[in-house]
Length: 127
Image 1 (tube, rainbow, N blue to C red):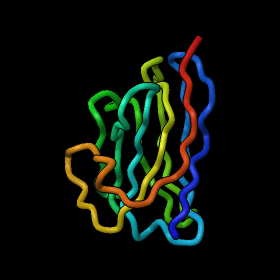
Image 2 (image 1 turned 180 degrees about the horizontal axis):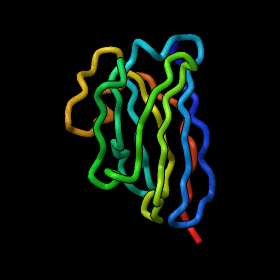
Image 3 (image 1 turned 90 degrees about the vertical axis):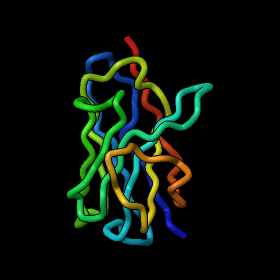
Image 4 (image 1 turned 30 degrees about the vertical axis):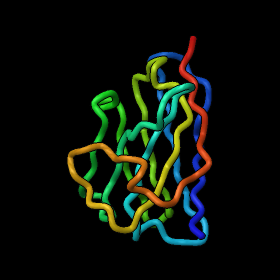
């Protein structure tokens, strides 16, 4: 069974930065498209970004475009989400997910397209 573990979430002030990590256990991430999602209290899970297996394609939700950057280090078996200029509306639980077949287009990811999920990491943006 695929296991994904997110880390890096914490309380940060508006305008601050965080880097989230998505690490794999028991399998190699290099064979999977990885997506990042977030879920705010009382809201549906939202696709933020995803990255292709080779890392040459990625996409972003309009709400994070220009502020967040997704990257992958297959040698470390880890995918990252660098988040800059954080806003209170970025608050939520952030999840990573994996899929071996998804084609990465310009459209941000949909949760239904991903079969393996981590447990999430809490990001709180507040002064």
